[in-house]
Each structure stands twice: as structure tokens, then as C-alpha cells.
Amino acid sequence: MLTSIRGLAAAALFGAGVVVAAPALADETDPPSDITISGSASVVSQYRFRGLAQSDNLPAVQGAIKLTHSSGFYVGTWGSSAAHKTSPIDIGGSEIDVYGGYARTVGGVTLDGGVYGYLYPGATGGNYYELFGSLAKTLGPARAAVGVNFAPAQKVFNYNFSSPTRSNTYVYGDLSSGIPGTPLSVHGHAGYTAGGFDYGRDYLDYSVGVSYAWKRLTLDASIMGTDISHAALAGTFGPVGSYANEQAFRQAKTVGVISLTASF
Image 1 (cartoon, one colour):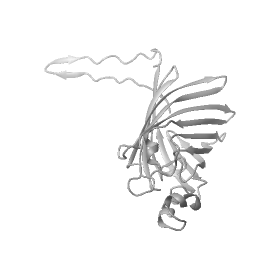
Image 2 (image 1 turned 90 degrees about the horizontal axis):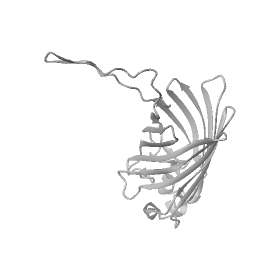
Image 3 (image 1 turned 90 degrees about the vertical axis):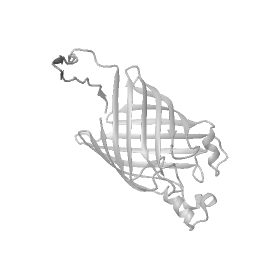
Image 4 (image 1 turned 45 degrees about the vertical axis):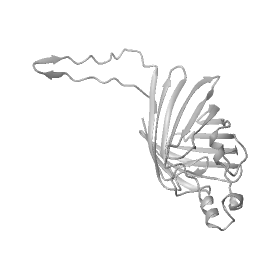
């Protein structure tokens, strides 16, 4: 995904009999830039975050860009279309995330940590931030990671009437591996939400999937969901069998998700 910044040569300018020479192209022997830029654009059959539907189980478009310095510091932004007024999870129609951190590999283990901010332009008072940290290691063709995201007490927790907790902790583990000799890779994820971002109760989310890479395109098919039942939502979203309960469960049930991503 990472690409070096490429220089652009200006064309010669002609006007009123005056010729302005184009600047010389960058010398191929120049040292590489300390900054690299990576990004992506995706179409997904639905947007799920920690197992919960953020787009009311409908398709979404997403994009990202990240700047990384050779020192290990980085900043980036990510955005997605989302549900608005049609779902128990209403985040105002769009989400824009901004983040910054530092990553370094020591003894084969990559340490990563920083701050992640979630912005919802169409939602009132829903913005929040998390502190995050993770450890990752490559094991042959596989890569394993564990991490934690912690959201300290902040205004967003005033809007979750189902939980008295005014902070949230999310812990997770990831495992992925390319299949040698093929353009395929497999991946799995499990996470646990505890605190003010519960959904009826603290819950487990999971996903497993397979990806096919061709040049800069990646097609992914995954199964993802949560361990939340109709009964777990009864105290918050109406009794089992009610319309409210069924709609709430629809956002948390296990589904198949397909995505197509172009990276640069």
C-alpha cells in the first residue's frame, strides 16, 4: 500500500514570446523521501464496526489516507457513509476518523500506540476519542496481533442510557496469513466490548474471512457478527418479538460482508 511521493514535472510555459523552462526532474539518485503516503477506497456491502452495523445493513463507501514518517510516527484519516434516522444505531449519515501514533519493531515485535478520534458530523454529541495500543508479530506466513482501545470518560457516554459506565475498554486479537503460492489470504478477529459502548450488555464480536488480491485491488468475503441475542436486548429495545427488539437484533446478528478495495 505504501508508495513514495512522486515528483511532478511542470510543462514548459509559452506566452507573449516568453519561454519559461520547466524545472528539472528529480534526480534518480536522490535519497528516498522520509514520508510515505498510503491510501485506499472501498465499496462494502455493509459497514460493521466491532460487530455492529453502522449503515443499517446497507452498502457503504469508504476511503482512507495515511502519512508515515521514517521515524515511525504517522497520522491518518478514514471515512465512511453510515446510517441516518433509519436504524437503532444512528451515527448521522457519515463518519470521519482522525488518528495519530507511533509504531516501532523491536526484536521482531511491532509495538504501536496512539490516539484515535471518531467524528460524526450529522450526529449531536457523538464525537469521542480512544487511546490505543497493540503488539504484532509475524510467524512464518502468518501475522498475529493483540490490542486494546480505551475510551476515557467523556461526553459521548451521556447518550448511552443503557449503561452507567462512563468509559469503555475494547480488547481484541487478530490472526491473518497468506496462502503460499496463491493470491489468497485468510484472516480472523475476535474482540470484546466492556463499558459505556455496550449494546444491551457487554458483548463479543468476531469475524473470519478470505481475501483475493490482484494488483492494487482486494476482494474480501467475511462472516462477522456478535454474541448478542434477542433476549439480551429486551431490557433496552423492547420485549422479544417486538419491532424494536427485532430491529436492534438486526444490527448485531451474524452476516456475510463483501468488500472491494483499491489501494495506493
